Length: 424
Image 1: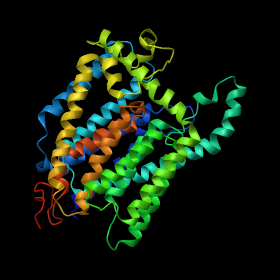
Image 2: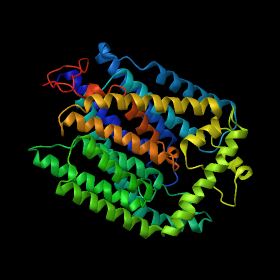
Image 3: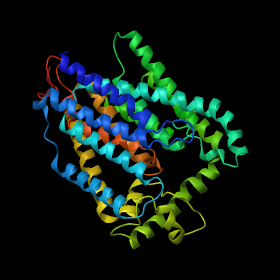
Image 4: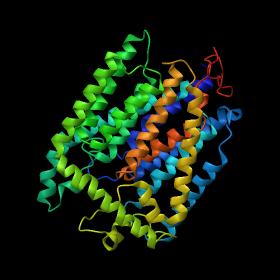
């Protein structure tokens, strides 16, 4: 590996490590993570400068339509934040979105090769492990000691704890997507210690995910595992695959039964969401042009709900953006998402012609599956209020705009000449 390539890999590892630590807002009790998001955005800008300085000829042809839609979304979002009244968390979520847009633009403009993507993923996995461990320490050790002091001062302990990545459904899809990526880049073949380390890491992340008791995420992770196996050409009939699938099903059933009954799941989890979505559509119909303003959904929902069920969020990121930003912001987001994901899938179809179990095919499939998991869960929950989720989604979609660049012979000095799928 050349010195420049080594520098880029180290920088990407660092950004991957920072995303779950800062993008998730894993901070001390009662400290808000706005400053952490700013540091993360600065790190992304610094990384962009490093890429420009070290390899200016490596710029990729960015897809024009998705980039235009994303630029429109960011500009409209910023203008709404500055010119109109907004909710209490609107600034934090805007910082997360702008950082995510920077990552998308960077990875689209400067395509990653397989070595750099693996370095970034390893950093992402390790950062998630650190954050998850700290979140559990915070929940089990620190918070029980601080809660009595908060009560004595007349406060509500629930408002002061930030134990994210644990017992927090909105961070569960991030953990699940990281699990998919970890499996996608895990060593194969004779790398015994590498396989053992990967299995340990995935097991620890699975424990974290199960403790969150997120029913939708656990179910989506099962489908993601099946999609990953099919996309990489691995036979599902193997004993290991069947055992892993069985264990995942048992864990999902246990998590569901431990948290709520199936009657509650149907009445509140599904019918409640249907009522929320119906009210959200009524709000969108009346405020279709400019929306109600960032973070102000809960101020208006009382007027549009169809029954006594009240919520602060519509549990669907598309409905929320359309309701708060109107047709321009919502349309830009929808067009960008569909166009960029469609391009990612088209490029994956080329990479899927590689041999079954090929490392590049596995990594590319993991990217496609992780994106799908994040999008699907965001359509039924409040994921976008956790900045780490859109940051990871945008970054993966940026990599996906040049997904075929991951499949290249190791002798190439850069990703400027991707390997033709099926070639030796």
